[in-house]
Length: 501
Figure (cartoon, rainbow, N blue to C red):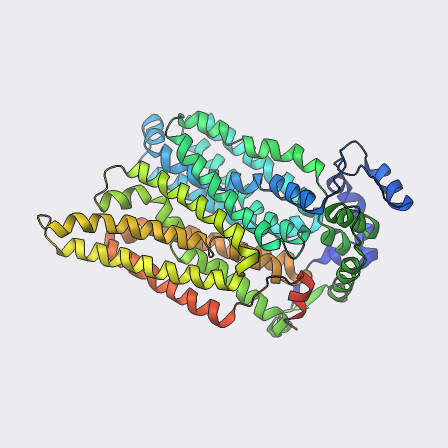
């Protein structure tokens, strides 16, 4: 029995034989206008297209590409946040029961699991850009189905389609950003993925206060509607092109990303060595996964993405309004919006800190803060059940859960929210990245679905007990990070992967 890695990456000849099938997704843009290039590269650019403006500065080029693909995670976040402000109106207009609406809310996770299974292989076969184009189509159709829904069947179909697109996006975007970013910017640019998710959530919360649910679904179409044409103006991942054996295209893409005045010889040679090493064998036996160079990256990547969700973040955000009501806070919708805004700000700070403080330190700070804040919420709810409502301490205990949840969201956003996706895209070996990345993404979405489905049951059982369970998980996350997670700041992807050998 064997573990099929990226079969389509099996050497230069194999990549070239199927390249014609991938061409529509590779150079469908006109980001190639050249200036100051060699004659060979200039002729290649002319062949591929020459109607876009010149991008000479490497940081501008990479940031522009990142901002374009970040439209995908905004869609991701908007999908997650949509159900919270629309719950009462959808239930009333379509005469749904609470359980039927709960199914609607959870179906995005089910669709995302299916998308996660397919995401790695789609991204490996037709490229990162092609994968995002394919993911955008079911998202658009899904939002249209919801906006025109007359009964639960259209709601469910739309939610499943959205989830599928989100599942593909959640894998492809961090991988694309990691593969195009220079090592000194990879952390900051990688965290833009999670920042965009939080922006999408906040937009759904904010617009949901003013916009009727059908019109809100129409607004949900915008990110992917803009993303599809924008993808025509950015380069494909140079590392993917190299893995497919498209040498000229790979060097051209890298030159555009690094700037036309930059000498890319050293990086080209390093990527070629890494690709040559990973392409010697495209079939990995299960017994070989016990080797340190495969076992450790898989354990770290999957472990962090599972622990991210086991912290209870999706259950807490999904039921934030009811949690605040249980704590005695009357303006629960405003408090929920405030939590969404704080999450955006904290994730923005992480974007600035990642390439300065490093991944590992921020993960330790994040998981420590999550553990303390969740413990505070748990103790506050236990005491609230014990102390009489007439006591002057009862009012103070209503504030503590709000303080604890805000602190939890800030701590989560400082590390556990963004960094697991970055590390997954950095440490997985190239020859198993497609399938292993799919498994890691599937594990994340499966855990998210379990947490979302069980959160309401746990909260009905005991508010204090629920947050006590999440506290234990966060404490374990801290131990996991300290023992197993390496620092990847300031290292190339090739250096990171060689360190596991």
